[in-house]
Length: 102
Image 1 (cartoon, rainbow, N blue to C red):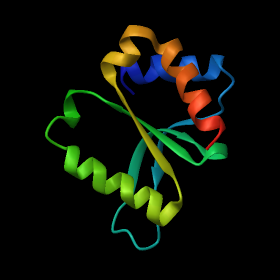
Image 2 (image 1 turned 90 degrees about the vertical axis):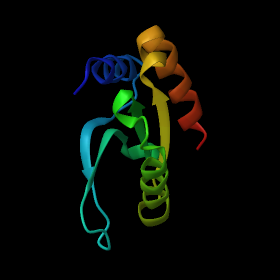
Image 3 (image 1 turned 30 degrees about the vertical axis):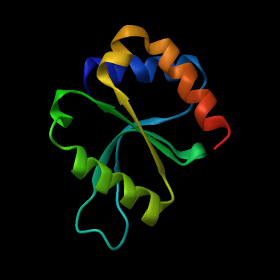
Image 4 (image 1 turned 180 degrees about the vertical axis):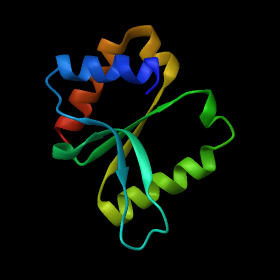
């Protein structure tokens, strides 16, 4: 787990958002599982924190997000590393509001 991932996870917990970190998700028709940064089961959502490793992978990320939605009914929200580094509490509040009214 990266530092920014840990920061956002702690901020979400302070907001009272129950979640799990680094969760393997897999549908029966997939060849392999994907690891989600943050999984919020009660809100059917995954939060992905996009850092430098996602540069040039945007297309693969979109395909993965579509698979989550189509096969598992899970919405993916992507947050930039820099947003979390600037103010993880603001990002956690924003996510809480956004996911509350799914």
